[in-house]
Image 1 (cartoon, rainbow over the protein chains, first blue to last red):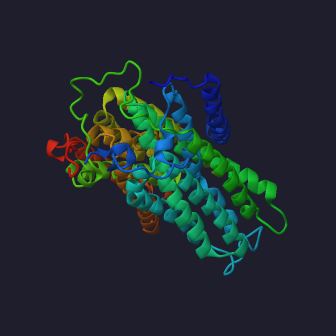
Image 2 (cartoon, rainbow over the protein chains, first blue to last red; image 1 turned 120 degrees about the vertical axis):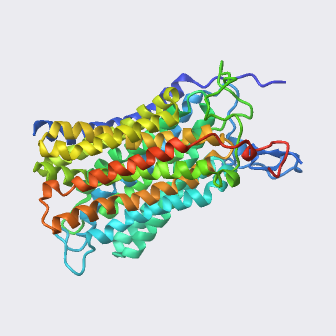
Image 3 (cartoon, rainbow over the protein chains, first blue to last red; image 1 turned 45 degrees about the vertical axis):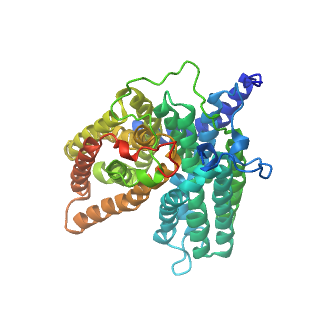
Length: 41
Length: 469
């Protein structure tokens, strides 16, 4: 008999993305800050 | 006897074996209803960590002041060229380990591979911390370069080939997400390293040892998250509503080519050249962006640093955007854009320098570097188109030796040519012009290689009914 499909929890999917997007976002902000002198100069 | 590819080519009707461990491929097969959108964050978690290697330069100066702390003590402290070898060895080992261990990666499955990668990469960081404590340069080379480099190679290929299997409908976008993570690794790793070193710095320590150890633990946790989230699709799985086109694009195959056959085809070596030349052209500028900007336009070090930061962002963004675009334009088409547009832009840079237009220079180089990143991210999907997904990880592993080669050759080329010209009296502002023309030429050679790529001959296709094929 086919096992009943149990969909992944949307909360789990969202949390997994947060785990990677939070540090990546922090890194992007750091790089944007670093590149500001280029536009001021 | 039929072979079960998902079990790495072992006989499918083998007698009862040991209970599979939690790391085995068969324990990572996704259950029905598993959401494939869990795979990109798992892959990105791994690539965000190993991408730290791109930010290694923040440790260069502190590593040359381990004894003097505030300044380097000549004859006792390490020098920048000595320390710089760590990065080169790590990238060489990345290519070598991916090439040699690719077959094992296919057999072991993504979870075991990512755990091995985490142990090597984070273990390498911990050994580097010990090397700093003992002030042993050979141990630093072994830790960060060799052990850490093996971790890079394993961690680079395993999530990528898994993603391609989960996203047959949009392989470019999927691999772009993971490989964007690798580009983002520098954006996270470099400021994290600086922040931690400033926290741990004291009158008697540069804080590098403690930073290596903290990063080892933090990255281990992240990579293990990736390892235990990742799954492989069940055999025969397809995304809901996805039907492979009956008449695929000319270069896209529905067949598979084994590793042994793939790397003997002209297509493999043409693609090797394509990747090598694209990376050589980009890495030469990316590695010394700040210095080049300062020399060519006489801007301050802060502005030069800002330029380097902007290029890192376009490197990361280009990985996702160009790779996603390749799902619509085709891999060959996207590479044609990279090579043609890149060659034109490189050839224009000396003129832009003569006009002293910083804004134009920034726009042109940001576009060039976005295509450099895009080249990395498009390659796995290009391989999938040509060779199928059966041995994609192993074939990708062999291909990225091209990156190792370019990572060593590219910066040396820029360094050598600009230094040679400065020594012969060329003004610093114009010293890079010859390099720009050379890069333009290299990209045109890459264009020719890309145009020569044709579909793989059917005699190389894997015949599932014939185990020896």
